[in-house]
Image (cartoon, rainbow, N blue to C red; front, side, top):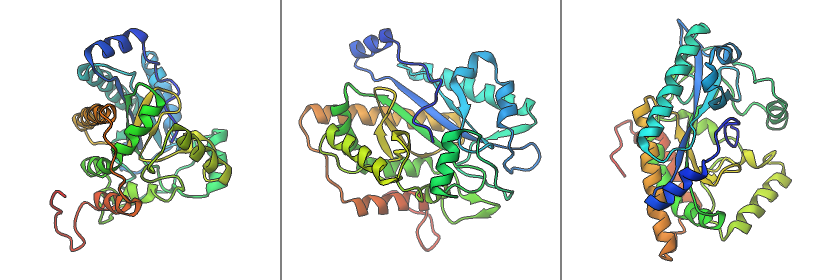
Amino acid sequence: MEAAAEGTTTIDPRLAARAERRDLLTLGIEEEYLLVDAVEPRGVETVEAVLDEVPEEMRASVQHEYMRSQIEVASPPQLELLGLYEAMTKLRTGLADAAERAGSRLVTAGCGPAAGPNTRLVDKPRYHQMRERFGDLSPGQGLCGTHVHVSIPDEETGVRVLNHLRPWLPVLQAATANSPLFGGRDTGYASWRSMMWERWPTVGPTPYLQSFDHYSTLIADLEASGAMLDEGMLYWYARLSANYPTVEIRMGDVTPTLDDAMLLAALARALVATLLNEVRDGIDAPDVAHPLLMAAHWRAAKGRSWNGTATRSW
């Protein structure tokens, strides 16, 4: 739920220069995982014990999430897909090993698949403030997603990229759906996390933006309304990172395998690169009506038609 992992490495200027020369965009991945019992797949409050077991060289890339049965990693920004794959392999493998040593298991699922008691919040003032203001909007053992950061040249260009991204994100959401089970039952959705996540007041498609000033004004107005504590709670499906010069694509469930995560990252970067060219060519983004985008995201989360048969690509 944070704007970005606190320990994420900043972009090396030399990497940015290489990216510019090769016309490549830097990218990074954040992933949230569930911590479950070693015997039964129910959430357990072992995050502190797992963090104690994390190797020193990984600790800058690992942090708490909202619930004590969750943990998060964030890769350093990378230019090459191979570098991102290697970084994420170390993080996933190292964290899974740390969880085993702490007597639990790491599960890559969008929400808790097995029945079990609700777990408690991580003991951080910000999280307690969120619970006090917004109540029990995230019950159970936690909701786990994947966020992909892709570099942009400046904020004004980034806002225009966000406009172009809007109609594409339901497709990526459908491709990452990974939470059909919740509390020991089949929910009838491919991504039940998406349905639970939408209860937060700032979750949803990015609105069509006129400029970066418009973006900033909306953030200020949402904070003033009480709908979020700060910019870190801007949970639109794509946003500008509050900490890095990136567009952050954040509508997907955490993916079951690293190959799935890499595919999402590669598609996200290719999409942003394509849309950057459209922005530079002066092509206007389609202003898709917000209700249609909401319907498309619902269809992506549903993952099947309303009569229970498999949904064809749409």
